Amino acid sequence: MRRIILAVLLFSLFLHPAMAQGVTFYPQETTAFIESIEDTETLDLLFSDATGKIPYVSLQDGLDFLYGTGECTSEVKDGIIVVTRTNGASLEVDTEEETIYFSDYDLFLKQPDAVTLLDIVLDDTVIKHEPLSFESRGRPLTVEYGSFDIDIFKAGDLCLLPLQTFSDIFGIASLGALLYNGEDLFFVSSKSCLKNYDDELTELGKKYYSVEPAELDEAFADFNYKELGLNLQLNYGLAESHNITKIREWFEMLGLDEKLSSTDPFQGDYALAEICYKYFGDLHSAFHVRSPYTGVHREGIDIVPSPSVKSYIQNLHERLSARAEYFPDGVPGFQKKGDTAYITFDDFSFDRSRDYAKEPLTRKEKRAIEKDFASSGIDTVGLIHYANEEIQDNPKIRNVVIDLSCNTGGSVDAEIFVASWLLGQSSLAVRRNITDCQSATSYTADVNFDGKFGEADDYVGDRRIFCIISSTTFSCGNLLASMLAESGKTTLIGAKTGGGACAVYLTSSAAGSLFQTSSPWLFSSVRNGAFFDIEGGVVPDYKLTGYSSFYDRSERKGLTAFIKKLY
Image (cartoon, rainbow, N blue to C red; front, side, top):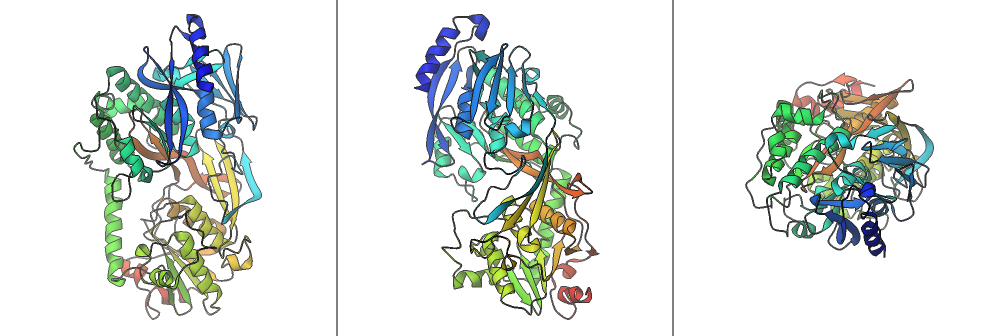
């Protein structure tokens, strides 16, 4: 019904050019695939001869799509479109001044189930959001879309904006990206929705690339370039540290403006990959999936990364090779050395499809964890659950050592689960640097899966806790190290971490290229009430030099002996 009413409304309104700048849009009911080929909805996209192949969407319809019907309402006040959420936050679209004004950007984009404005933890099954949390509102934010030559229209009390503009301002805050291949719409929260880790297409990926590759027309290519500028101007979290003040001027300084605005979609893909790996070079930014207009069978994208990225990768490979000398048959996730237990994981993973309370670890899986955790198929939550059982049942274990020396990050939820296990209650501090909104959200975990949170058998606070860190400890690894250091309950051993303070935003180009960047959400430490981002890394309490000091765990002369000497 909404589509028919919209068509009639638009037809009647566009008889009055003053109200809609003489542009007539035609609605097209479009199938939207939500992260898989099986889960679908519909959304009306709008097209006009005046805007060519650029799909538009009603802001109201788009917000209903993201948040559910009834969460947002629209009205017109003095010619300005005002959209209000049920939480009281509102925005104002002024199509004359070409601005979108948020009096409280963070509150408007707050996820319905979030405890604080910047609560980023999604799980509510084994992680509990505690009421003891803190937040402070951010500054108002104005998105000056007109400065990027992007057209947004008012049609009665409706706001019509390009689908990609909607995705870059609103969809990105829902931790996903909206992609359009010229036929269907796709909402994805990770690259794995379209490609698996062997780089093979999923069923959804096959659907995404089922269209024929094609050149972009000049108007669409121009919009693709301009919208990318708005996207990164708003959403790249490390712009200040990269001395980027005007993103399109920066594109020109790099000599990438012609590639990014090319009608050849491959050129745009290649330039995007260069931005992620060579010029951002922050280890979080990455190019994932090329445009469907490029297709999957065109030549590869081979980028020489920035010196810092290249150095990090080389350092990580050297460290992994050195560790393999001490663990030639694989690195155990859980290992006992006398009264010391080592827990090692190189990333944070959370398998949401498995309920360990109903599907506990098998004896075979437990053996696999103690033999070679990387090939066990168990996620971080399963590993910590098993380690907790072993430690709780063995009072002789006095020291718990978390080895993050090769940890490159991953799931924030899994990181919070680990932090809560070690500390009893963890607190994640986040600042959004484009508004200076701040929040600190507290969590406890149900580590033994008995339905009770934060009890004595859910954490190991009565043991001495150590954490091994290195220059390749990055992102969520760096975050856990920071949280442990801030707690004062943990001894950090090793070398300064590799940093990485930003949460990752998955985003896209108008031509459908999927990539990720460092977001404006900065993980922080709090000292005397002040927030400091952790981009610069964490310094250990005791420094280790040489790989043998990190991975020789012998009780006579190795790391285990060193730890015993500290107490």
